[in-house]
Length: 394
Image (cartoon, helix red, strand yellow):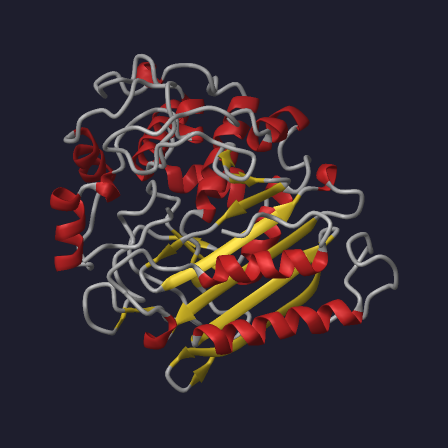
């Protein structure tokens, strides 16, 4: 059995060219709703939450389907945001660098001297996934099999790093690219050590508090405050409610979060849509596609590949064309958020966030890599709003 790994206000708009209007037209709102409703029907979704923001303002926020059997989904429903929090961790690292607490290009050995490779792996390499620490999620025997046997078990950061270090190093730090949850767990440990504060406190002080994300909570447990959107999956060979599977394996302590669709959309829009939350220099570091052409396929590393314009990586975010993305999919939850930053369009910036849960019929084969229908939905809406510059379909 294979686990799935990575891998939402009404408005009447102004008239004008659809891609360049300062808000959505009524025709665009209807088109977005049609896309959402078509996706629900086509993919037999259990719930779908959508928020679309143009120029920083929400133009549509809505929810369809059920939070759980017989209970309607609502726009304040909470779900796991997964890899969206990678952008928060990267932003945290950049803000600590702005404050002089760390240097992004300093090896983390000063802070984690006993960690193999820490004498050459830097904060930046961990944030852009070039540090080369093997992904614990890809270890069948030491992680996947135990997780499938008991998805309620707690995994500490030390447990996850131990699993990562048990696998042969895929490449020397800074010489290739590989998606690694473990690299971000290590990044969290290094940030804690450098700042002298736990990640929960750092996340509250530098990200969640300043962004006023009142619907977002960091838990290292399976807790979800009401109202919870329930996630369902057949990844373990039976159809079951996976809402309270323990997510402690996913990200650094303090970055394991639940959120609302509006918090997810507004936070991503603020962090990667323009500078201001970060300085112009830090913001540029986060989303500049400097890794295009970097990396190469590597035996034994299915996610090692050459980064291209259609898929490269910044700091805590995927770069695809002019768009910036995160697309988490795990434990019965599928979501995606994509932003067209304001310096990459002739019009206002656009952010689209979608979260979905599935029915048994949403996926034909639950034993293979699962499709992220929320990700597809974001891209369809993006193509509707900005047909001249849509993100690649993936």
